[in-house]
Image 1 (cartoon, rainbow, N blue to C red):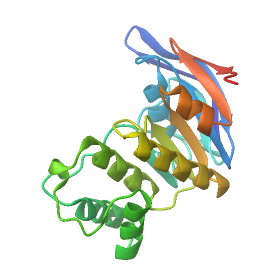
Image 2 (image 1 turned 120 degrees about the vertical axis):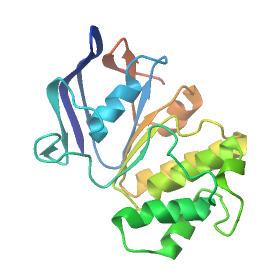
Image 3 (image 1 turned 135 degrees about the vertical axis):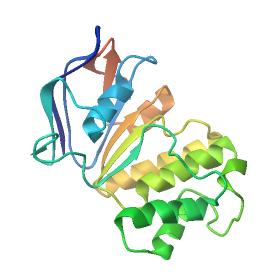
Image 4 (image 1 turned 90 degrees about the vertical axis):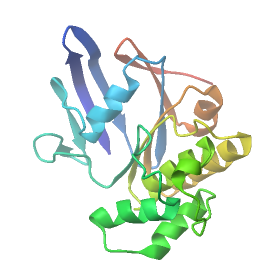
Length: 212
């Protein structure tokens, strides 16, 4: 569970988040919509522990960020494209990232790639991947440790229609498995098809909206 309580964040003279509160429960997908620069990505970074909020508090499964834990735990994160090694294959990139925190598990890494529609045996360097392939690889990176929480900022960017449908189905399957998913998207179709609850971020203010 993610609990955001009266969070504020300021960069110099600009107030980016203003008294933001929300609760995200397991087995649901929460959508956040809003224009570029509205504060969505800053909120996600605060929830992950990449940025410290100036006021309020954030709890992850009851633990306070910045006090009881430094970073979000057991989470798959896609906020900006991961810094993949462009001269290595997709599989080698994911294997390297996986073994930072885990014992080597080649089959788990391969399965993550297959789940998003990538061939783990493909020797092509990531630098030669299409935009859609890189986005699939980024999603594979987020899910490969089977996290309980997913923080996804525009996860379907760069995907063609088929890819979007496949990833939407994947996210719905993960919801059915009890994952907590926080999703930012500009696509009304994504929001309509995927989300149980929707919020709009406008000039740092977060409010629930009805998209039905």
